[in-house]
Length: 243
Image 1: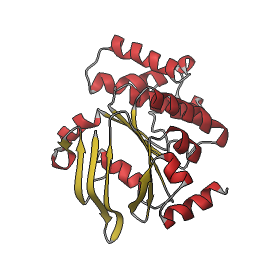
Image 2: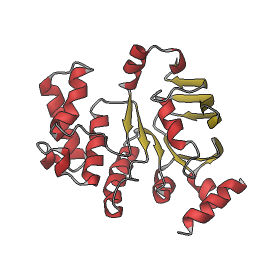
Image 3: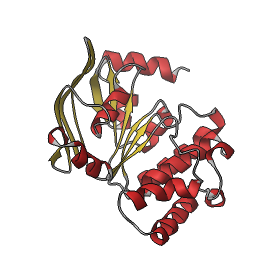
Image 4: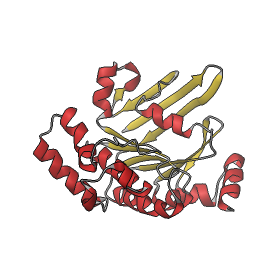
């Protein structure tokens, strides 16, 4: 579904991605872990060209995203749901309107169709009773579950998660990870940047360890967590798993 070839991203003289390559198959859950500043979020934002790579290639379902106009990119982005660290809900809209806006405006779906779908998605994330609420009436965990439902409302082929739990109080993390776990079990293709090692171990099909602007090591959760080959991976895991 996604193929990344030799992706480079520079900000001036600062090299943030240095020849990153990888593949994401349909139905796969890829979890990207690593120290802050290693390039994880930049990689994720390059996948749908929210950030423009300096060079390299990104193929999505066979289409080279580096060759597309902004209008063509907007069409592709309807198939790539994005869930951000800080929710990005529209505060002036109800929860229901947050979910129905894009499908109506972008995909020209009817109000009846989008409302029915939105209510089903709210049920799915355990927030059916919050349809008429506004975001300032919700907890952080509830906002993030709404953000996931909003991404799903566009019926995407892949979901990209940029540290979805890092802005949450610890007691709210579990409710968001549970929704993500359910999606993974249903076969949703997902690329998840996270510091939640338990989630990576339990849910990932493949773990990518990123540090120093590169993917240092890739493997199954068992291979990465129990038998890491690279010294940089070993150092990172020794530090985070000891906490």
